[in-house]
Length: 388
Image 1: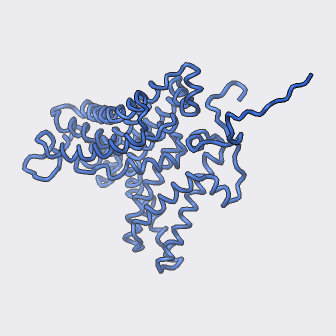
Image 2 (image 1 turned 180 degrees about the horizontal axis):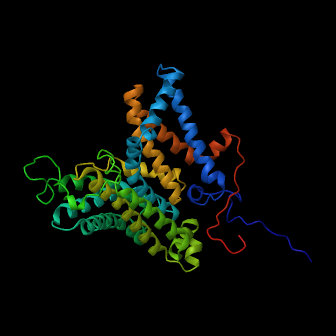
C-alpha cells in the first residue's frame, strides 16, 4: 500500500525565498558578505560620475572630483584623522541598528538615543569637578550609555508588552528627544552662564576624550572614542556569536515563533536588544560631546543616527562589516569637503552616493542581475556544529 504525499499549503513561499530582514543578517557566503556591498558602492560611484557629467562637466572633471574625494579622505594624516573622527560615532550608532536587525527589529530611533546619551554625558562632564581624568571620563561615558539605554528601553518595552511597532515609536521618540534637547539647553541646569542662546556649559577638561595623535599635531582630531568604538564592535561580535544571549537574539530574529517554542523569552529579547542598542547610540552621543564638541547645542547629532541605518545595511549587520562601512562613510564625509573646495562639486553629491549605496545594498538581486552574478543559496543557519 502506498501513500500520496500532499504538498503543504501553510507556507506558499518558494523554498529559497528569504525575507528582507533575513537577507540583511543571515548571508554567510562571500558574495553576500563582501562582493554585493562592494559592487553596490562601485555602482553608486559610477552613477555619481554620470550625475556630474549631466551637470555640464566633463568626464575628466568627474575624475578630478573623485581624486579630490580620495585626497580628502586618505590623502594625508590629517585627512585620515578626519575620516576616523567622522567614522567613530557611525561605528557605535551602526552597531545600535545592526544588533536590532539581528533580532528582527528596526531601530530607527538611534538619532534620539544618541541625543539623549549626549545630554547625559555633557551633564556629567560639566557637573562633576575636581575628578581625575581616569575617573571622570569613564563616568561621563557611562552617563551617556545610561541616557541612551533609557531611551532605547521605552520602544523595547512598548514592543514587548503592547505590540507597538518599534518603527513608529522610535521615530516619534526621535522628535521628542530633539525638542527635549532644545528645552533642556534653555534651562539653568544646562545653559551656559551669560548666554541667551541654547548652548550648554563646557565639559570639564578632565572629562574630554584625549586626542590619539595630539602628540604629533594638536589639529588631528581623532580621539579615544575610536578605541571605545572598536572595543564595542568586538564586544557585540562576541555577544552575538559566542554567547547564549546572542544566539537567542539571532534565533528570535530568524523565527520568533520557533524561538518561543524553544523556550526563549521574546519579551526579554526585545527589551534587552533595544536597551543595548540605545546604550550603543548613547555612547556615540557621549563621544561627540566629550571628544569633538565639548558642549551640546541643538541638533548636535548632525543626522548621525540616520546615517547609521545605511552603515548597518552596508555592513550586513555584522559588527566588523559595520566598522568597515562606517570608515567608508566617514571617508565620504571627510573627502566631500575637499571635493567641494577643489573640484567645485556640490557636497550634496555625497548624499546622493550614500542614498544609491543604500538602494543597491537593499536590493542585492538588482546587483546580481547587473553584474550577472549567480544568486547565493538561501540559508537561515544561525549556529554551527562540529560537522559544519
